[in-house]
Length: 545
Image (cartoon, rainbow, N blue to C red; front, top):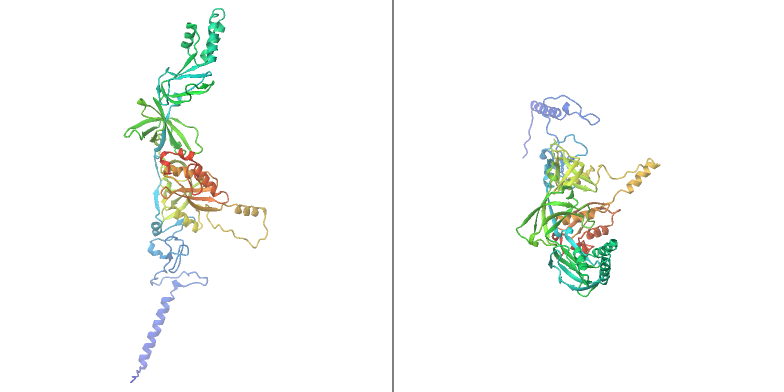
């Protein structure tokens, strides 16, 4: 059973007044003068009636690409990550340069971006070198036939035999010497009346490597000698024997090689990047595998003025005495050179990991100070010599500036996506070419621009395997690849043996890169290094099992 409710006239009036009052208060709240909007869409300056303004709408952004600003949650249009509210990042937008690359703290952690303040310090002053023991070239005697004849007898029967200065090595019968002795004996009879004839006959024998004593003995005896001895010009070791008993020799034929090994050289190989730090009289601490526990400390006596075109190294020579002959030619030596130049003054140093290479340009990303969220700027710098794991900065950076040393590629990728200055686009801006359809005529200047655009490099990134073992291999492989004009970057990973190569495919034939690396001594997926080049690599670089 339904119950009807009746309102008195007075109650109806009260209800009506309450409804009207509620509508009026709602109008006041939503139509305050300070929230009025002009017809052009801008807020009109009003007065504050004392009401709370309320919270502004939340702005959503991407942690990896903070340039993205959305008024509602969703996905980043660049990387498809979930957007996050700006107020959760704790960052506020400020007026920044249009070339700055902003990143949130979350993006820094995800990309593993690390920074370092640039400071001056002494360059890395230790250079690791590999070398070999060699004979002192000033103590090598090459004995050749000064006259033709026959080997009657050998007193040296094997290589490696030790001889002393003046010791007989062989006996030779020479018809020419017999004739020359006859001329001497005849001329001796005219010594007083024709001294010039006598001196000529005597000098002829001495020019054939007979000494004063041998010539005088012939003259005193008055008899012709049919056999003559070949004497050692120094004390040392016979390292080569080119004749046997009964052999006929001609004038100039090689007979023996004798080397004095009481003083030897150690020839170390220094790469181009190490040469700026090496000078004469620098100390080298080195050891030889066969003499375990024994170290040597000697000064640099000579630096080769030439670079080997195949191995890209120069020889650095150390000299030392070798009593007892413990150091033998061919032994490997490993040493550490203490650079005197590196200790002369402090230099501005940055880690190698901070640098992006684009051909001749070196690029770093400098952190902009006084920003609520991390912000970086692209900068090209000029580098000095390499110093171990660091580079000396010649121009472009100041002491105290902060640069990215890890995650640099991530920062550069963000810059490329935002059309800001980057490794591949130094000037920034869009690379797309827009056409002006309103102007159908093209002058000479515009045609030149079209030609320049057509000649822009077509960069391509590729990877392939290259055999190698150590840091020396890495330097050799990368240097060989970068020698080709059009190769922008070359980075060989020691662990994976993979070479990451960025090159202009309009200028570089990839097969030629393989050939260049193989000629330097390293097998690639397409080319094998020549055996004679591979065998000349340092022992630590020999990768073939």
